[in-house]
Length: 215
Image (cartoon, rainbow, N blue to C red; front, side):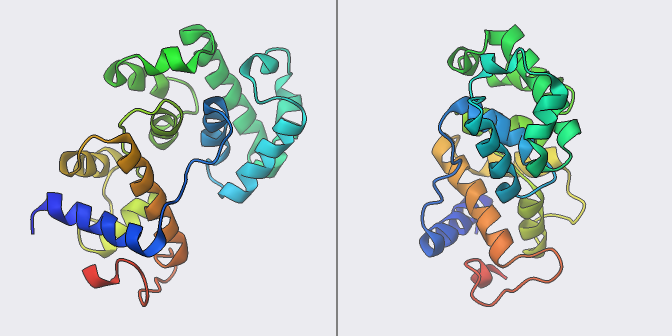
């Protein structure tokens, strides 16, 4: 079986078993950007509580952050954990969005990905997964997001070494899948669902897993 065929088979098995993920849940692309930072080193439940706290204070418009002191922002996003660190990273991202596009994400989305991605990665506190989540889910660019779930599932199916790097793993998907924003979106979300439901870090529960047949 070719890699191209295998990668689509993996996707189809997860999709048929689990259905559409409808991810990323957000009311605006800017909210997605915030969520990409808030989910760092925590689960979505905690990040969503922080987003709701921002929503309650009408802080889901970028210009509303300009006069907000960083320490006050940190206290608002406490549910997300590492709140002082994340407040600084959000402020750094806001500075980037203002300087690059005057907060106009549609304008930013029209830039070539190859030029935009390195600049995003240059923002202090924005790593590969966060940058690519912003590019895919907020700016709707065909950038495949990989994470710990992706690496774990692929390694346990003997498709990558355990110490596979982010770039190497990402390139494996982009080389074997069509460049399609909707496909990349759903593929990543399905991996997260399988990772949480079956392919857990401590001990996998392979029975009933949508990808059990590929073991």
